[in-house]
Amino acid sequence: MQDGLASCGKVAVLNEERRRAILESVNRDGRVLVADLARRFHTSQVTIRKDLELLHGQRQLHRTHGGALPARDGALDDPTLREKEQLHRREKMLIAAAAARMVQKGQVVILDSGTTTTAVARAFRELQTLTVITNAVNIAAELAGTSIEVILTGGTLRKNSFSLVGPMAEDTLRHLNADILFLAVDGFDVRHGLTTPNLLEANVNRVMMEVAQRTVLVCDSSKFGRRSLSLIAPTSAMHEVITDRGIPKSDLRALKKAGIEVKLV
Image (cartoon, rainbow, N blue to C red; front, side, top):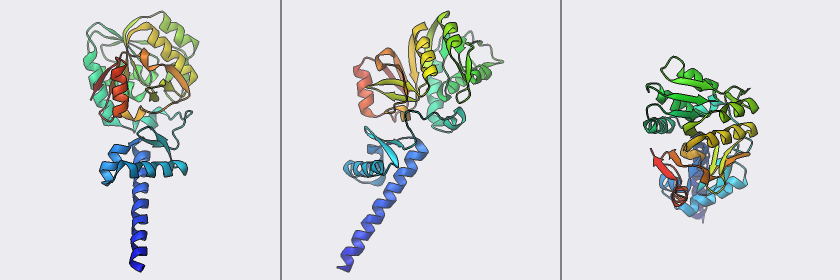
């Protein structure tokens, strides 16, 4: 009998340790996937789903299709640019390099605000004969001193994102045309669309999509399954997605079925 109690106690400790490790992973990486966790802990996906459901019920994380997000990651969550720069750096660099390879000499490119588009701007620095339109003050600063012509929209400064928003930014964009828009988002639910926590930012992003011939979403896989407050556009409004190989397989299938090109880095 005592051996049985000891065995039950050991299982309870192992379960608790696994759940604690899951929480550490989701808070560090910004997202966890059921399949990845099952491989990591050498257990079944059913067991991991039960762990996630339990932690979700305790409000320690937010359960999503195929995985989980941090509990703090609500529709109004709007972290600063500096906070977001600490996350998924390698993936952003690979995405940026792929974006830079798409650009041709003499093109006009729009970059919206965000850490991924900032990485794209850095990847542009060695390019020649290129015009970049942006509403991000930090991106304009990144490209200062290069041979790239930079057009800054003007508008009201958002301190969290260093972006310019409002009627002035929108009006400037409506007087311009671009070949490609590289768009970064805070959330991408394939069934719902592209989202951001700020209403004014969403308005500017929509105008960017209107004046660009091609819209390319640049986002790491942690953005999938998330929804922020403001809908920018439905998934069908995009032409292409550049993301990393951590994208949930169900989302990858849905994008391809919708006829959207997906480039994995």
